[in-house]
Length: 258
Image (spheres, rainbow, N blue to C red):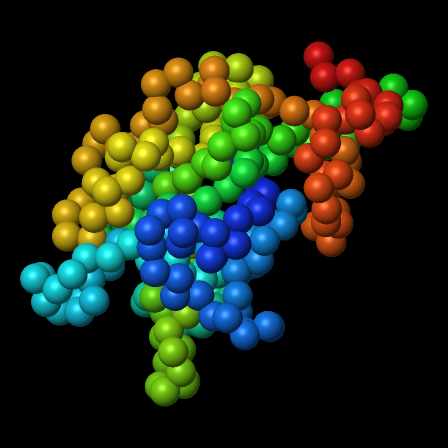
């Protein structure tokens, strides 16, 4: 199967997230100045919003710990990298092994985040009845009740060795876990969703994540709608709410999955 969770939708801007989470909005405000993107077709290397808990003074254990919204590049750049484009894009990390991987283990210890999503996309290979060829059929996974998902992530602060005075680049990766229930029919992996009662423990910068945080909430699949959507989302340049409309409403020919 393809690497999962390579595209998602998010419609909450940083100000909305800050109000909902009682957090500080630390994202750039200037147009074109690295503000997180809001839209229905978010792809790797895009600047996205991420939620962190950090102290006002990282060197003082008694400094106030505050929830913050920060802008991060989706595609983690390890702090030890010599350049951004070295190696494969690290936009996903396996939750069960990230703590042992050189690219993610430092972040798993003290730089964990939450990435807000309305839902995520996956693709299934299917026969096109018109041509008989295999095509990529997109599906959108989203909560039945329209609520927002908060997905576990890890982040890093990277400094360009050739630009000593430049601010650090913040970047993140989505953690994935084994798919559950009916979600396994679409992909064998899915984003690791964190329930609100676990946010504080997941974001805590002073202690590692407990093993029980590396699993999805109980009965998670029963809360998720699996929606076949338009193949327009296959092109990353396409954007708009029509990308998450059920394909039956979009009047598309239906490929045969099985």
